[in-house]
Length: 339
Image 1 (cartoon, one colour):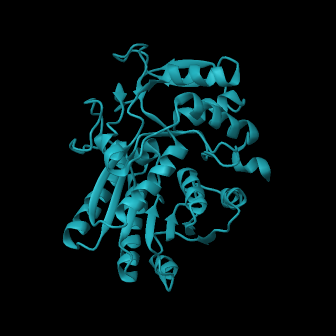
Image 2: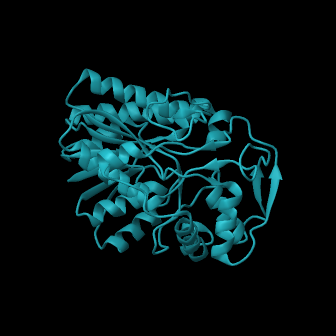
């Protein structure tokens, strides 16, 4: 199968690209490198022992999108490209709507013109908003509470409408929970630009000495230790979920929604403690006020993915922390460590 991976040089994209190559697929990565590094592609090729065709381009450039499809004969697209920081989306919503929604429309135009109608889309559990009706099933009404989440929700609506209007489309909407961890080699992993927005990479950067302490937002939630509970999923489990969705869509049409999570929640303090165990030292943390819009707890009902895709998350929190630490200590400054 020949697969176009948008945003394939990023965190989840690079791990999924590796899995595709290891399974024998031909991969073309399309990425503007705004929040990613070309070094990840070099390392993916080293790990797989196979080459990746890389095209530097932006989905907002419709001519560049059309060019990548010209004569390429893709069988499917996995769409990761987009902006993903909640706080940044609140501060600059116009940029998020333009990049995520308009960029996706350009991609869909390019796919449709080229006759490529199998798509796996990188959505997010943020589409559920602050619902605490746990575990969260795919049947919940979507009610995103920030511009980032609303871009994902709008794109899901667009893709659902397309599949309803044209029965030739096969679309998988993958609603991730909280990705963490890295490839077991420590060669590829999460390399956020600036201060990390997510818990695990921030904890890892504290452990490696890049920050003094982890800020824990809220310790008065109605949870066992007062801190928020989330569903953390290993990035390799997530990558394998994309391949499972790709195979499921091969002989089916329509739009399908799947949660990708473990179905279990871990509190902020439990994650910090698990990471402390891995690094054999206490990770310092400080409490801060709750952030507006944060739910007390959120974890997936992943039964649909288990039943339909024959996929389940196999790696636990301890493994996530161990693999993430292996990446971080080997690359204290991320991919820049090798430059």
